[in-house]
Length: 239
Length: 370
Image (cartoon, rainbow over all chains, first blue to last red; front, side):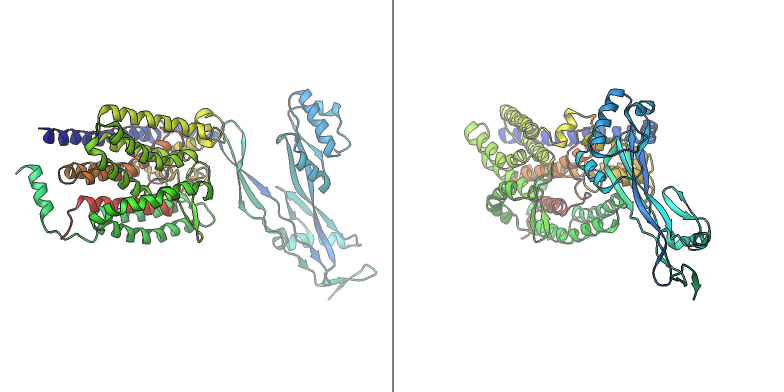
């Protein structure tokens, strides 16, 4: 009697095991249908509220050199400091005090002026020195309200007649583009390829720094050698 | 002829085993589909073939071990259980100070550049060990001292390192499978309640062990965007993005960009975005078929060899519990636990362990060839 009873009870329990997993699977299938079919639109709406922001990292423009390798046009990288001034004047004042411990802002900025730009982003320093940059990174006093942006300045050798031949560049999305003269002629070689960085912004507009990812590395532009040399008396000679 | 007689007669027939049973072939097939799933989940990376290629490489030794597990003489299996456990349990404890640690997962050993997760690899042995203990204590099943304590003590030796670490996903899979085996055994209700109480204490200790770890924060502070709850939300969005029929490879933006651990913990969601609901349903049905197969074979073995019945229940429950937890986490039905999907998630230890489990189950259900 016991022998017959024991396996039977265990058999029932083994059937119950299957039923337990079948119920679990039922809940899973229901949830899948809910997310993927019935309430899909709500999820897609939430997706549209968040997303990736793409930042371009401008590439350094190549130099234009004479046949001897003397630079005729070149770019230098500079850093500008942007500050999103808090909405609250007192917080803004505190942050201002911290910032000025590390950085010398452009002369037009003072505590009175910042009150006119509350809750706005302003350029605090157009040319941040490496020392200021380092101090700023070490102290990091403002929890992300400061942004450092890099940009390039194009320089040309100060020689009579040369500036015109070299041409002009403009800046578009941080990239220097040749619009006249040699700058335009050799633009494809000089320009390089900007880098791309992607960061995720959550539904409530928060930038999630841990999601930051380099999508494409920066490729600087090539140097271009001109087929002429600069003489000592500053005249150009065709070779 | 009754079912009991029929089964016994079949068991006595001189049988020659096939090289691989249908379940074995299916296991290898699913392993290869898993490589595609890993490729799908890592398509956005700079080296999209790397992880899938690694997974294919792991399939070769896993298939050999599947064959070995299928054809190992059954008496050898039971002779080896205790010595193998005596070696493995200390390794689980040694992994705590000496292993390579990642939050939320059990430590790995680094063996000549190959990372091995001992707790993952030891799952088949755990199943056999518990089955052996259940069988040894079955005659004293009503006795606290000779029926309950040896079982509780033996299982505690395996699970305590996972609570100390803590590795919640792993510990819950081990604990859950053990509880299922107890439920399917002939233990008295008071013992079952005592085991359930011990499991609850273990879970409480697990939560207490690391209050600031991501999985704990995910439960206590789910609105924090960097917690794993945030990740789990992205899993659901990936699934929603897939819809009914999914999106083609290369267009699965949410799986590509948002699911950081897409090849491990969210391989189901990544797959869901590509295949859609229509593609995921067969996977759920396969899981149910696995449980039905194990449940049926355990019922048959009850009348032939009770220790095999215990082992088959555990060998069925381990991957099934793990898979269902993985699915539940991905669907937002359970808090975030680092639980890979057997056969599909990237990782050699998990893959090999799953293959061995299938091989052992097939071995124990088949009659011994003479």
